[in-house]
Image (cartoon, rainbow, N blue to C red; front, side, top):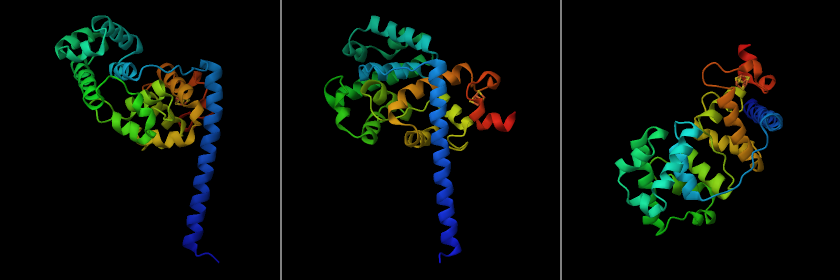
Length: 239
Ligand code: SF4
């Protein structure tokens, strides 16, 4: 006969497994609804260095502004060598539309210098030979590159099995109850990677961001029109 301590531990394990199964079911249902409402974004791949620069530009700004800044950057500096050799103040002037221009200019120039110093070329294809953890760690050696940016580069450019968590994904998944209130964005990467089917990482990442921007806003979420309200913990608690 098991001791009360062992029985309690067994019960806790059963409860945890049940919670995970419930969350996976909720994720599958949400994925279907979001695909119906927003569509099924498809992963196209792309140049990893370009995606890295785009991701640095996109921090704390809108897609429109960061895309405009990236186009301006490409027009002014058509090669990575030209961008690497440019003065930080000149880069900052070109990417002004994206905001935090000085900081981002430093990060972009620093990233290009780092890649060339380490690899001798502006190419990140070698990351395909590393496992996800090591590839993410390698990218995060660069200033301005955190878990979100590293994951976006690996998923978007190389179709790797990583799930990027930005501020929208973090907020929405906490409200839905898929991760706890106390889970940091950094911890959420690993937890959500274990819960979401890898082949749905890209579509769910994009659709959760869209939900976060348009409906589940940081202030005053528009729960009344939200397609996920029936399964949302926040909604059940506050309505
Ligand atoms: S019901 Fe409200 S809190 Fe929940 S996901 Fe939708 S908008 Fe966000």
